Image 1 (cartoon, rainbow, N blue to C red):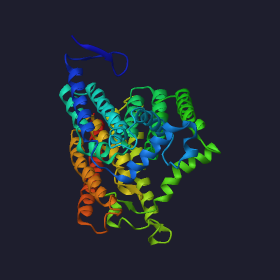
Image 2: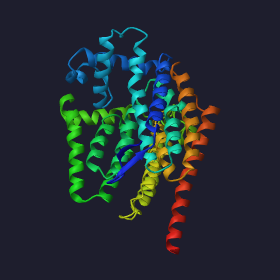
Image 3: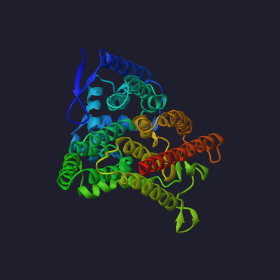
Image 4: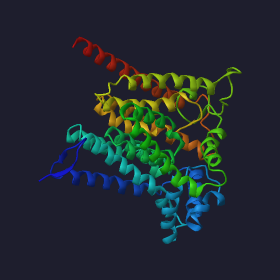
Length: 418
């Protein structure tokens, strides 16, 4: 007996006996483990802030949330605060140690959802063992577990929407993809580089009508959340939310083990070699150059080929570059590359090595930074651990670029010979 589910485009895909049950058991086991780890201490500032936001959203009118409290998180998160804050209030958990379970539950649920997305995407394109192994590798990934179950952050939420949006557009469903893309943007500002990728894919792969309908779907979804919650002018409200957070962290690196870790963690990014050539400007110039390279390879795809593995790999590269070369990066901003490197197994098995190494460096970056943050400190400038991990990240990034260039050059050479 087999279960028939929708295939890539117009067809069915059979899952073997017990396959979905195996996946369900894996994901359930991961969720239980994550739930059991939730009482562990995370970053006290984030957890205290989330506590106040959960409480405020559940206590009064949700539409007045931004009027009643300071919050620099975009509007979709307010829905999360309200749902899980109401759950905490119903069971009288505010003011008790058990509240940690509720604070950390949303991210863990979305992480489990991401594991499922990884399985279903890979299962249509690879053998069952690869799909199950990849889903398990994410579900039990120590870096993602640390982020959600210990630190208590929300990076899992926007990562889920990023993957779902990307998969939908590759499946030929642009309107649904851009609805989900709006939810990603409404979850975290870090989706900025992904937004550029999605617009490029939409315009390259779909006709004018689909472009207009997809942009309309995105706009309608965004307005559905922004208009009821905005305070004052909606445009000014959005700009304050998305640019305000970026503006208040004017440092070369916010404990991120990237290129700027070698400059320092308490160095203003408005400094530089010359007054007009600041660290911030240098970062954006490098990122712009890498983005042009990525878009070049995206544009080199022929309209009929629909090279999905390449598009997935390039999307991961955008997030990787975003973290590695821009200033004002936090230690957690490499998070989406973990899941995207697993999807990139369809592009190259070497993506598994990228996944394995980055799992270690992301985990170490988070755990190491957390010690200092809970003592109200930055990682010290010149710290040997920060230097070593940053150097590893830079080496992996260079290898990822080399893999892209060498693989695509080889494909082009083989195509010319044919």
